[in-house]
Length: 68
Image 1 (cartoon, one colour):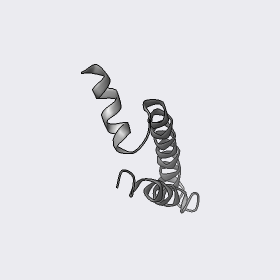
Image 2 (cartoon, rainbow, N blue to C red):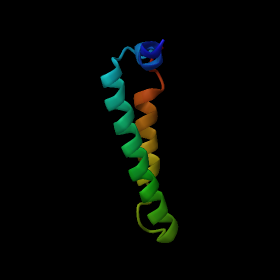
Image 3 (cartoon, helix red, strand yellow):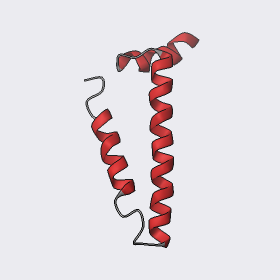
Image 4 (cartoon, one colour):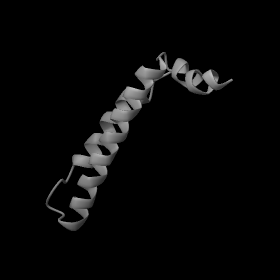
């Protein structure tokens, strides 16, 4: 039962637990950086004008067909 919690979802996207851990961690770090860029842009609009939106677009490209 415990193993199922950690392996079912990664297997659904053809990854091992550790591959999924690495992918999800990189995804989270990218989102954190994008959030920081969005905050900078909110304060100083001429900075980081497309940084966050480009990061989100790249993440979408990497994830929208996973497990299909």
